[in-house]
Image (cartoon, rainbow, N blue to C red):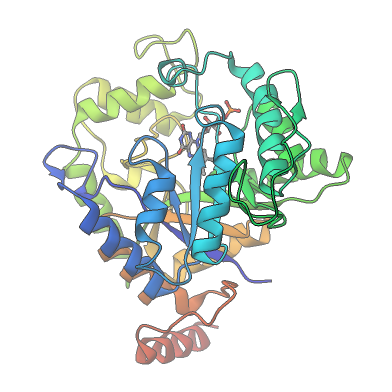
Length: 398
Ligand SMILES: Cc1cc2nc3c(=O)[nH]c(=O)nc-3n(C[C@H](O)[C@H](O)[C@H](O)COP(=O)(O)O)c2cc1C
């Protein structure tokens, strides 16, 4: 069974977009170009994260510029009524030929109250289950209403056949695909009831595989089977040296302040930068250097061959792998690492590298020919001669 490779369709972009000097002014034209690149290069789809442009609007605005890419759009339950979200989803599915997937994310206590969602962490998942359950029923065309603890929808009155008034205009469009995340016990319990595909930030292949096996076992108790996917940044080049040189360029262009802010967000509750001690000697050494105002060299954040916790837009995970974890290396080595993840049950990889359009091309050019992709269509070969070279080099390495 092959894997799916997705990219990232969200506004921040640039050479080092986590630093003001490396961030570009991006607008709709840029996002259309990015979506077109993702589509043309043959990615399975792209992740649309919260926090930037509204994801349903963004997906809709690039539908006609794209033909086959899927939109994995992150949604916090509760910001849009389930009835209305079902209508939006039905419309996008009809207009796009079924290319919308929702990424059910529940955010964190820091962000949600400021958006009007006041349930505490665990209760947010109880609410979320009802929300998505009601959503799926509305999406499927049910007029029966919903009588939950949190979600109450009255049965829909009969409307004349063909009328578009009174509810989602279409009858059943079948199952709506929901991917999502949640690592806490409440998050896992919610995920195994709801999701088609469970996502986690990356770790070493073995540790990520262990997590997926634990989640898979919980799903099996409910008679459900989940697919699994992960999120990684990527720096792929023809040689290891080039990839690590680029990683070093990113470190050289990152401020100590950015590292400190990222560390502070990652600290366990009750710990401060001064109080925290890591059991991992390399992490502790990196921490000491950063506290002294110096960023250690790129290679000091390699936690496993080709897996790096250096600076990224989604965090500089000095304390351990999280949302900013990056694959770094030659195409052959990165492909080998992806296959290692695949052997641990990972079927979908949501990747990003900066700048997004350039790095999407590099990944398609260097990496796609080395992977067994299952995108549901023939993935174009960007450079047929490279494909022959790589096949030959794999043969000679064997
Ligand atoms: C692949 C992936 C994408 C995510 N995207 C978002 C996002 O767009 N917005 C957001 O607030 N959180 C996002 N999250 C984080 C989740 O909202 C949540 O905070 C995280 O999974 C921790 O859940 P927990 O509190 O149950 O452990 C994402 C997580 C993963 C694994």
